[in-house]
Image 1 (cartoon, rainbow, N blue to C red):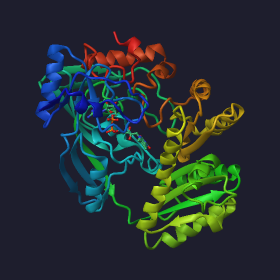
Image 2: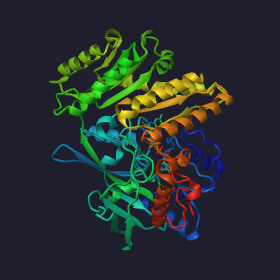
Image 3: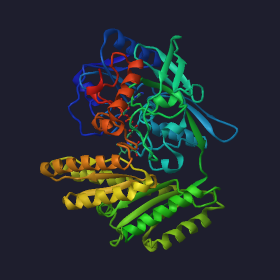
Image 4: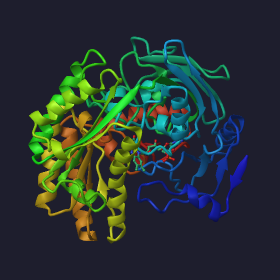
Length: 497
Ligand SMILES: Cc1cc2nc3c(=O)[nH]c(=O)nc-3n(C[C@H](O)[C@H](O)[C@H](O)COP(=O)(O)OP(=O)(O)OC[C@H]3O[C@@H](n4cnc5c(N)ncnc54)[C@H](O)[C@@H]3O)c2cc1C
């Protein structure tokens, strides 16, 4: 067991990619095997000290930042325990929580398999992506992490643990989950009694559904119920080939019409030989302006762009490309200037293009005296246009610089407001609250993919109401009766008693 207390060594565990910079800890436990992780959780319960669970610090919500708590780090629990290919072409990977998403993806690809969840940032740990139910651009076709978790081993405060295989423990018709811990202790939990938002992506609060699987209670629980030690993950056959296209448009309304039709056709596609996007990503005019610093060839008349990807085969590639170009032409894309990435190298260059946007924004922000305000809310598809218009009209009316980009296929855009000074920053924060209230009134979620962490916990009350938060506290206390695990994350602190 490694245990660090020296500030020069614990500093690395006090940050993630949120702007929170005032975390502090008396010490960081870095177990070198699963048994040692269980020992830390037992010691914490015996000696009554709080623990904050740490992944690789790429989270955006302050989830892994401790405020006086000890840290339990996953870094050394980083073994890929096996990757198996099955006769039907799918596979299973058994991994410990500290395995890098990037390493799992590479290992799967080498066997002709794909681990589908891809939350843009690949230097995150698998345990954290499970605890956050991470998703990304290609979740449009493949879904979020939840769908790929077949088995979990979760360590609990006190040093007990449970192993859950999907399908083994389902809530009965009265909403009760019954299961047994590794120690033999029998448990009973009534599932959370609230409705989830009807958005295509959602990761805020404990999962709830009739006859739900116990495994789903832990996925997306942001480390508030237990420490994910190990998982079995479903791998799908690696697609033979992918095509990627960046289509520019001179009229924003054409972009929306293009997306609506692409989404509808994707939903209806019944065979692999039909037009069917695996990603549909949006860049607004302001995003393109940022990108022009590095990519001066972006056409001057472009007022928006869509990046899309589709799985193809050598036999279907030409025809499907033709269908996509017909759709682009129908919606007046700037065909001559659009960029088709057909080779792996071109696709890497296109990924670099997309990744450049946050990099350029961060460079710009580093020269300002303030920080950005970014949204991760999503609304049901029928309300998407309303929220989109609200983002634009309000930012423009307030004269606040902004960019709007992201997962338009899932009706989920990230708005980044970029205040130039503190006065703008405060106005941007007020606007954020207004957007949040509107998104909730439209039946939306406070977080579609980045989770709640510490930054958004206060909004969870607006999503589920006080009764809903008390439901979460009731469940947390079954696993963590003294309220010591990831305190301050997800559930607002005022309700933890
Ligand atoms: C440029 C960029 C783009 C991103 N894009 C996306 C995106 O498209 N989609 C998306 O979903 N996310 C995205 N993210 C967010 C981030 O990558 C994910 O949330 C990821 O899951 C965090 O992993 P991590 O290992 O860095 O976790 P950390 O930041 O270290 O921790 C995240 C949370 O997980 C908890 N945790 C960590 N390990 C465990 C464990 N073993 N058991 C239980 N709880 C644990 C922590 O307590 C914390 O609450 C992006 C981040 C960046 C920087």
